[in-house]
Length: 272
Image 1 (cartoon, rainbow, N blue to C red):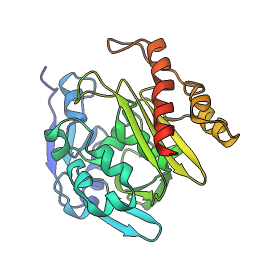
Image 2: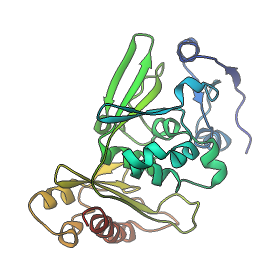
Image 3: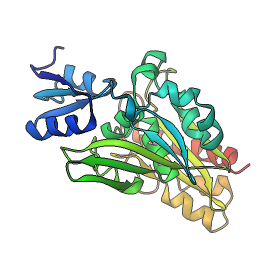
């Protein structure tokens, strides 16, 4: 299909992007475009203006910052995958970036675009949720930090205000084990179900992909692990509190069963 008519503006700074968003309530930011443009073609979203921030190089970086890694929101998946520093300091992010879509998507898609799009079937939001990442949103009043648990309030919704730009993502350095397990029908497809497990504070943080309207923590699994359960026993609680969809890729019952298998595998790898 053909998108509805829209205006286009390319900006050269975050401040200019904020100004453009404030001037038009129907404006949307365009970064890599691999999330937004398909929805526009289907007319699920019909922005009145696209504000192109894809060329803002000062929001594309990976750098060590005390006990965390700071990642510019416009850093592309390919650069995350290729970063030696990220593979050493927070390897799950580098690894999962290399599993997103196909090479074309990875060379254009950005980590910040994925977060702002807030697709529950996206790989990176659930990984960042398991890590307990912090998101930096910049608006006309300055910058503020948003915790990972507060970033995804609903389906395709982020905590960003209409006139805010996601500028940075901060992830903790991870010295322990980790795992990301996902099942797809084809290599480039969205995950039917995905599981991120990160060993932290003597246990593991576990989050789920495509098991509800938002990326979600597997709180039942984490509670079981804290009580001393082994991975297989804890994994039986993988679908607690979830609301998986039923579609052509799998029924709700199938996803519930699959989540338990993938959580067990992820825990066994992360806690080994």
